[in-house]
Picture 1 (tube, one colour):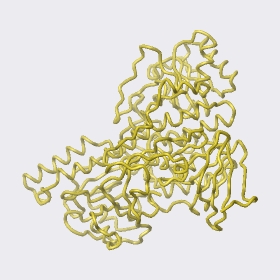
Picture 2 (cartoon, rainbow, N blue to C red; picture 1 turned 90 degrees about the horizontal axis):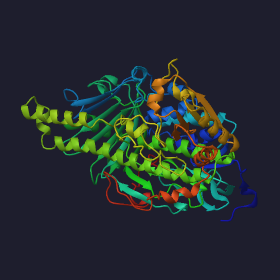
Picture 3 (cartoon, helix red, strand yellow; picture 1 turned 120 degrees about the horizontal axis):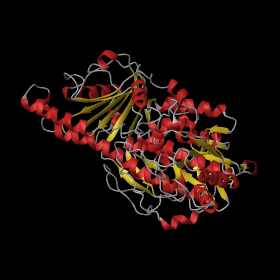
Picture 4 (cartoon, rainbow, N blue to C red; picture 1 turned 180 degrees about the horizontal axis):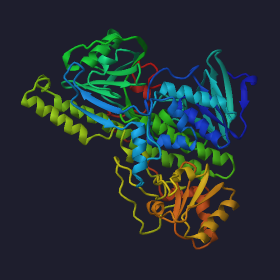
Length: 608
């Protein structure tokens, strides 16, 4: 079908087309607007999701929202700050009690820990529980209020074509079926696991399905006494004899819950009512445990996948993939949306820098170089967390009858499961994963010879300001946060020992029209010790571009600033990427290159 001439549109050069109005698309638009760049967001659905999907905005995402001055407002829509984040592992609510638990601090408790532990290991912001359905609705409102963001819900991307000069996107207005052609300089594809942007670019998706499928039921219940019989919980994991029963998430600490009920192989989910699934899950080993269900909100079946796109950008660096379009994972660990938010911040500031005139092609090249390795680690880690539960099931296998008794065998099995979970407690607390990722790309200026990178720990954030890293958070002598001193664009943190070098960098930034805030912190010995160098150049996303003690001349200073904003794209040849090599992840069944090859027919919208 040809496109009518009146339906051919050319966006201004300073306007980015965003395909997908979920959390990643909306945050991408917000980041662009934060840096003064316009965008148009096309979303196939007529409104935001009614599905719960994610339920935790992690510590790094909250730090990034703090940079957008949105963290405090976000918290007003989430679970109250005094509520604990307790995770229970049990064989069923009819049993005497949970086998073990993870007791994560509330936001208030976490904030006190941050204030008291000023050693650089802590985040600037605690995490925040908030359902994606609530999060998306809030973000949509924020975008509607911003003059630089235009939202078009009920418009879906059909195909997209990239050229050296720009992009042509075919988009259908779902209400009328009319086809439109939009021409733009840049597109960010945030259009989900079955991404039309990714398919149009013919980018393979490596990975595969996990060996389990779930029935998701999102419901309301005021029967809190029975639901919290074993104690108030955020997450509840049910272990069965030889299989993982599933999980329940308390979404709002009031009345909204979500279960993920494991489907046995060959079982038709249509034969199980939502109420039956809820009772079976909560009953665990002891048979159905009924609660009063006030309302079924939504239900769906899904088979989680663990996969990463082979590339995150088109060959012409005009189209970029973010969120589920680029990577998918199982829910354990909460890496899905949070990894996508990291994508949004990265591509958002880089596109803004290019459109605003001071960023060059190397910035666009660096997006895949930086974000794909993070996605590979996070996606793999989600499988590791899921494997933790499956390993606990193996410990229970064949001993289920004894667990409910006070026998020696039962106590030994429960003790083994308790020990296992306490030794593998990284789900939602692997801060090395969340805060400790270190970029390596054409826009990161590495340390000189002899500088050794500190060891990396997936569970614990190791403070470092090495180029590519998120530097340590620390409170200064006056009680203020060093992160709060950083500017919106580039920042030069100067501990006061290298005036000539700082002046050279400031002069180079001025010559290149790079917006740079000079932050002098003389006498801040504790912060300087944690930041490791007297001069640290920090990017708009809070990662380090360069650090050092001195520079020999103006030419070297200019080279550093040029590299930081993408002038030297060819440097990537010295550090070739290995993204053409297929990978396989923990908990996957074989390999696949397209989502349709393994998604359930009845999966609804949960992973769309």
